[in-house]
Image 1 (cartoon, rainbow, N blue to C red):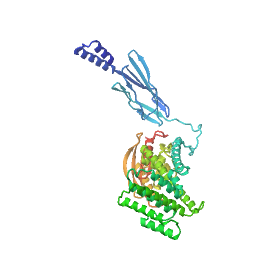
Image 2: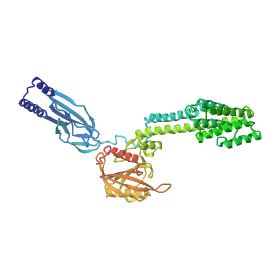
Image 3: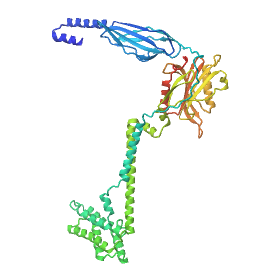
Image 4: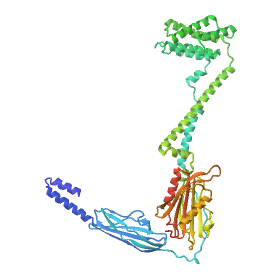
Length: 554
């Protein structure tokens, strides 16, 4: 239509307003007529047995320009959609016949109304007729059909389909930590220049330091203070390492006095002239450092020669060290320990930095609480992430999905109710007081029983109190399951006794579904503020289904 309109405008640009007005009226008339449609629905039968299927058929006859939208999803409740078949299309002239078929079923006996279904043709809604469907039970001849006891619980192999993800993560983290430890701790690294210099004897270190001072830019930059500080420290360090006197921390007079005492005692055969010349160098250095005196170039050269001369004469004045002496070995071992300690510090710091970086990245993408709870193996988080199990429990059965299969246990009703009960089955996971506890009770009352649902609920609360629960706060509200089953929710907080320590405050929710002659109760107890437990409870409630039972519980 749009292309037609553009062609008209293109061929006749002088189209007047009257013609344009008539064109739109014509186009609008086509659209109105295009909305006319015919919708017919039918079913191949209105009586089935439990589990059999009904073929429900919807036929729409309409113009080819109209879009048609058929029902989707579980709009046929209380009947269930087994399969929705593809649309069959038949074309006759300018009309389309669209046929949509659905396979419907029901697993409970009774009479059910197939609700009205809405079909959209263009922007107009059409509705099918409702239909009453009878679902009959299957008669079993027990004289010919063998009956067997109910089988017990069978172990099921769990799926570990996601194990490779955790393996890759652990390999990545373990490999990163190993690489850091290897690089900083176990790898035999070549010695750095500083470490090589530290391994040299004191005399060689002093001459190397003097040579480095000659190549410095102190004198070019007129940094006389820095020059004399390095010059005197080189000599002082040499005396401290070689002569074993506290030279770096001594003043000029204290250092000269120590040298004179060593000379007088005969421990250091150093002549008076060398000591006097060194005193002048130290005094000049003090004037330069503290009085900001600028020495002449000749004085600087002379002081540099005196410093090296004192190092050489001190070396000559000392006795020759024995090869592999204990002092030399001790110095090497001390240096090696220092180096090893530094490597350990670097390795530990690197490993911690790597782990923090990995934790930061994972926390950014998944949340820090999620990462923390995963590393600390949070109990309810592990339950939530397990591969869940769905099963029917009791009679009349209730379908429940849980992280673990609920185990049958023996929890009898009080004697006041025991006479009114035809049968009671209890299934649970965990124990009252655990971080997460599930208890499912299915009770069938005798036909002549006069017990009401409220009385059964009161007895359920009394049973909790008899188990030692204290300070039980009870709130009540109506509840409707996802499948439309109405019930009663009792919830609140209570203090649950512990084997060790004081009673622990817990949250609880008791969901009760009462039907003619029976009661189904689901109790969930969890720690306050546990978001994972709340997610587990929500997932359990979303999966509850009553239509898979063998009897009508509606």
